[in-house]
Length: 492
Image 1 (spheres, rainbow, N blue to C red):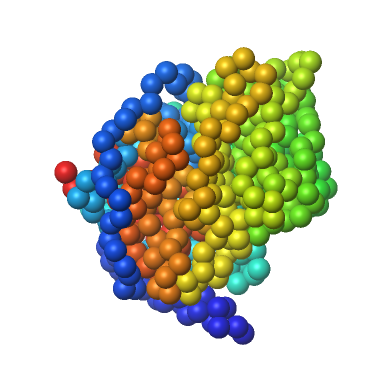
Image 2: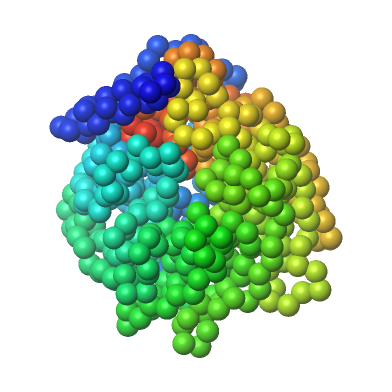
């Protein structure tokens, strides 16, 4: 076993051992360098951005799941930290909380996978566990496999519905619905839809979302499964967009405002709508440019993005060309020209992303994840290829323009977020020092310039490993990591 693999095994063991009986303990950190770099920001609100329509079957925008809303915008109207007298906290769980949502009381609802997989209810101010409901775990030894840290199925995605209930797809093929207990000390199972009758062996649920009419859609990675579930009758229907690794679906999907659903496989971008019987039906499909290579920084040889819906009738992904392009399509069922633009971002031989684009009005933000192949790729001072870029759809809709590109900050795998209230892009970056420091990082939306960086901690436990940043109703930022859950808030 190499020195790197040995380090991973030791760190994993340490996290798991620390977890039992220590719910309020912080994630252990190694010594690190400067605590804060840059200067606190002055809020510079972004105006003129059309609001994302609220899906009535999801919790309020910003609270429902990892990508904020049905459009997967990754954009908040509320503020995040400005960098004033910042305070960082963490909660050691021995499981990674990849997707964070907020109930109406501002409490954190999150699914955490690892040593103690479960649906957690967490007090955000005290960073303590209020309650937990166990979820089906993955097969033994899953995290020791080559792709063990890049499997998003079996609870990596979930959503809060319009009644503050958590809807989670399990590794056993069940879609479960949980309500909080009256005392807010845990969850009660209030619904259980067994989908094994329509899923084949090996088709693990990846994600589920309700469309604007309340029909629940779900996807499974293998064979490109797309399905619908009538929550009242329990009737489920599926179609398969591929076979095996051709046409597989690694990420989540987006739901529009008129029953429209957008799915990206590792070969195609598709719009689907439900037929009269509720079954999923392909409305249009296009093949995007593809190098045919699974780049370091991707979990398969296709797009790494969940589709992002934009106002004006657009949807965007990245392709898998070299260099990678930000690609925008028109969403209408029938158009003379489907593709609006394909704008190259980052360098040839060093461009990849495994995260949804940030969408705000006609602007898209993309992050470079090239080089992230799992936790060992950022150990012992290693980091990934830096880069962020902003691409705007032209006002006339005839094309797109790259507004800026930033090439100094390396964000190995985080889902970044934008606050319209502060004008800041929030991301999570990795330093190259031997103790492996990780930083909460803020970039200027208008220019891409670095505003500030705040040390989160150093060492294996602070690697976010594909988890998404969440900005809470309290103005703090939250992010899952291999050690558990982290937070950042202004001190004043």
